[in-house]
Amino acid sequence: MPRRIIAPLLSLLLALMVGLGASKSAHADDAARKVISDQLSAFQDDDFATAFMFASPMIKGMFGTSERFGEMVRNGYPMVWRPSEVEFLDTRDVGGALVQDVLIRDADGVYYELEYEMIAGEDGWKINGVRVRRAGEGTA
Image (tube, rainbow, N blue to C red; front, side, top):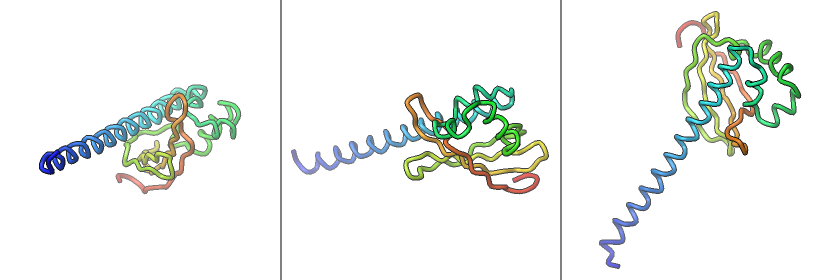
């Protein structure tokens, strides 16, 4: 094939590959956000059995039961248990895990930035851990 035909074809192929990668990444972001949203909704309803379903096998192994898991969230992560406002921020790949940053406002108006570590499981994304950083008082 002449060079003037090959170069545009290679450019088109590269653009398609990049586009597919971006689309796949956006789909993963959306799926992970849905898992986090669904877990937060379950916490709002005090439905710890459903919230526990979104936890990774490691987290499930650490707590054993949804009741213990719920107690840990109520006592250790009250901003997750009863958020008054939730905003999804950036996502990034860290060592094969997807990290979703979430800004949460608690009932007292304090903002927290949380890093949700998400891992892909056989039945979709699971929450493998949450790291909390206090973002400050009032509006962010």
